[in-house]
Amino acid sequence: MSTAARQAFFDRTHTDDLIAFLASSPSPYHAVASAAERLEKVGFRQVAETDAWDGAAGGRYVIRGGAMIAWYVPQGAGPQTPFRVVGTHTDSPNLRVKPVPDTGSAGWRQVAVEIYGGVPLNTWLDRDLGLSGRLALLDGTTRLVQLDEPLLRVPQLAIHLDRQVNDGLKLDKQRHLTPIWGLGRQDEGSLIEYVAERAGVAAGDIVGWDLMTHDVQPPAYLGRDRELLAGPRLDNLLSVHAAAAALAAVAGGTAQYIPVLAAFDHEETGSESDTGAQGPLLGNVLERSVYSRGGSPEDRARALAGTVCLSSDMGHAVHPNYSERHEPGHHPLPNGGPILKVNVNNRYATDGVGRAVFAAACEKAGVPWQTFVSNNAMPCGTTIGPITAARLGITTVDCGIAALSMHSARELCGADDPYLLASAIKAFLEG
Picture 1 (cartoon, helix red, strand yellow):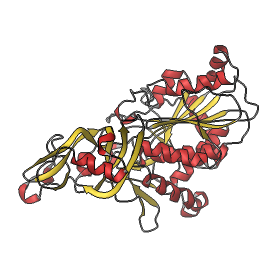
Picture 2 (spheres, helix red, strand yellow):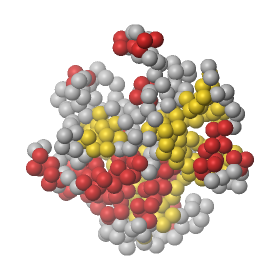
Picture 3 (cartoon, helix red, strand yellow):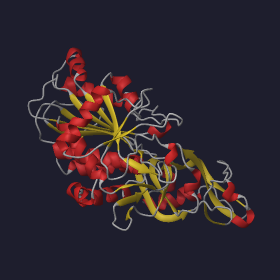
Picture 4 (tube, helix red, strand yellow):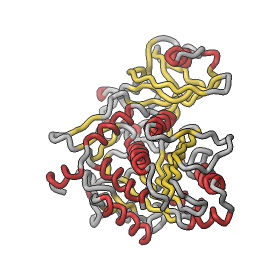
């Protein structure tokens, strides 16, 4: 796309807000809190799963751990009104704190971590790392904590002690990825005591935690013309942000569809959890929404038969230094618009009918789009798309935007594409 055409689509305000969203969302728990904050500004309200739900018009959301389901019931929506669902995920590969975190060696104080998801290990070396996540307290409540300061670092071995490092870096996941955070002997309980003090709670009240590391370098525009965006957790908080923005924009619309945002946790580890796409959370919410509007099991079946899910997750842009690893006929590039993800072996859920739905949404939004297909000689990743399609029996389409360095501590995409994706999602939700 030409520079002039790109400027016609580009909305810097959306990408600026994405940068703020990424910075405020270092963990899945923070991501759903940040999304909820944006939805509440347009009238959405949180409902508890343990409460009875009414079928009145308006926006609602449920938060369970690091997952969120949000939906808007338009005026006049009946129990058979189908849904338009945008599926995303809130988790990203990283290093997570173990249950017994305090460790050390050779006079260094360290923190024991476990590797979460498919992490390119070398991207976490020599980065200043903060801590974030949630604390579980004795009274049954949880407390979010976000320490945006350089607390930890995984130092790489100096080249003088590994002369063959440029012939192939080999990292042992157990021995070589333990961050340092000071000098001295390991002191049992010291990490949680420090975190408790910063969170404003008593260390003795903390009975559990879900803590993880994050790079404290903020997201930023990159390049001569600031046409690229570099930052952490683009996979897949970019989609969460785009879907939340689109849902907020369509709230108050017609009763043709009920727009839904499904932001799952644990996609990077297989989605098998009560907050993952393999779990019943989305199905339960959709079912209860039908029943709260006076529906029956027959109405639920009819509503789902007309439902479509757009699974939005990051995809691969063609890498200029490794172009031979990409499908030669499909070279998606940053700022070329959203990508349709296709795999005939059902690693993605898109079929011909889904392609038509996606194309119609992009045409309605006035945005360009591209197609991603894996090279036959390379394995293909997957998403929540096939899982959602199988669990609920609904038409599902896989899409996203093209990026480099997927799963790295810091990823790269086009600065225009977040707005283009959000525009396409908005058109999809409107039907």
